[in-house]
Image (cartoon, rainbow, N blue to C red; front, side, top):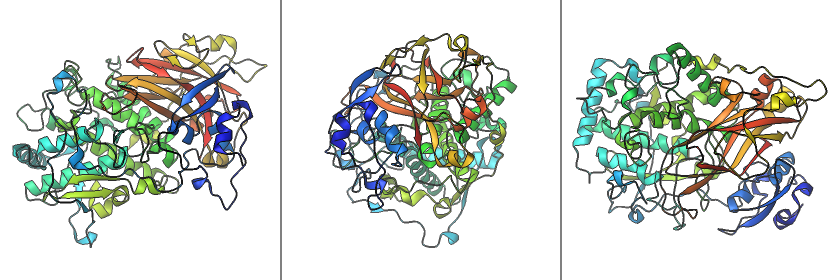
Length: 596
């Protein structure tokens, strides 16, 4: 078997890996790297010309370029575990520092929670879960007057606590800022930021966050059965800002919201900073198709649904899962006030927790985790990687006591003693539709020249700055129709890699496949739209690239290729279209890989 050093020096076109022997499982194939090691990988651009680029340790380990395609073809996982255990560990709260370079409008000295003189205790679920109260989180739009009054009372009590009380609304709101804007370094890695977005930590962190927030609220009003509401934006009845949050005299109201989006305005789950020109019926249809795409088409496996692995010593922002990208990101930006300098409150991670609507939004994100697992219980399972299961966070509970909680502690909602109100999921039958009429050559499986001449510039070589629509022809690793069993076993994935963007800029770009001459004719519900990348503004102080993040977008193609009739094509035409933050994004490469 080729060594890693041989792989790093061999020309890209000649990479070849044999399958690991039974005594050397893929999970431990890669040697443990030296922290901060950097190698050179020879890559090939879309034009076939060699392009030597410098990648960090993360790029090597994730097998980008031809290394990744060869490794996955050989049966090596796309996201192999390094030898040894590398879960992201709880930070030392005493080392919490101020977030870096927040906008002048922030008026934030620190995002740090109040210090604790006691060591954290490990989380323990109820010894007899069946005897503990079961909390049912209601859909916010259907909550009755008695519930709304109780919720108002609970939030008012939390807001009345002094800021140095870790149960206070101010302290709870700061938790999101601390974990998202550079206040912490991972334990043992003082030169790196700890980040819970853009990776497999996104879902479990926010579940933990809501769990303790909810328990504190219940304790403040003496009701252990109290549950927070969820904003049911994935169904037509819930696609407006819940009325309970729009009453100005309520503690649920936040003045730093987009004034154009108060009820009865329908939310746009694909929002890019501009108001769509849809009728209400069209908006509902688009939203449902967006949900189908993100929850079903783009989430066929756990490794895609949860996002990219993030282990101790890694740079943050490894790559988000589909639901984190959309609808999570657009809902944040749709709610934030564009008149504020940095889109506060919901439109910026440092301030998002100040809006009570944040918790209802994330309750529905958490509900999506549960719903996704129910779509196909045999294949939609939680990850089993120990580095994910043993990753841990620190929160204060209702006592207040500092608690260390691991991802493995929050996988079973029954053990946590909460559930969601059962509501319809109409998006399950809203499969996107083909909106473009293609012109195909009778002598080639590729799109005919007239269809390829889309209104976008050709990317001759990468990296490219995405300052206008950009098109590239990408060769597929397979060019024949695969059986259903083969598709279930291996997913064809479009990889947009080396995405570099200033982290404090709101950015969105769309990715189209075989969109023909006019990608503008394809709406959010069009099958040619493969997916999107969204960056919600945030800041880090430790990032070696200054204000920029470097990340990856992975989009499953199996269903899309079926619907577009492209399963037998040798290549596809990929169009990258900036929607928000035009000219603020650099793309390192575009390729297609096969992954488990």
